[in-house]
Amino acid sequence: QVQLVESGGGLVQAGGSLRLSCEASGSTFSNNHMGWYRQAPGKEREMVARITNGGITNYADSVKGRFTISRDNAKNTVYLQMISLKPEDTAVYYCNAVVPGWSGHHNYWGQGTQVTVSS
Image: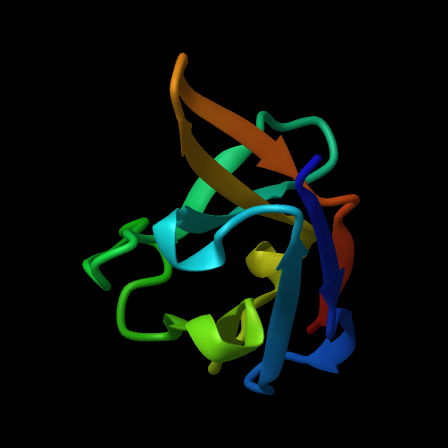
């Protein structure tokens, strides 16, 4: 069973920075596509950033130039570096793993970490 444990959330002022981490276990991490999603109160969960097992990244338009996703396969960890944070970035951030398997790809989610940006 794949487990994802996020850390690094918190309260920060607008313009500040945070780095989220997500450590994965229970699978061959280097084979996984990883991602960060977020959900604000009253809104649907949305993709923030993704990184493939080959290192290709893509970002939501709202975070391009401010957020950077990266991975360290030796540490089974994916990161989300966030700078120039805005109040609208306030949300619960979830780590996602897409794990290839014999029967197809399987999605796993972490428990989420709260990011609050004050104005």
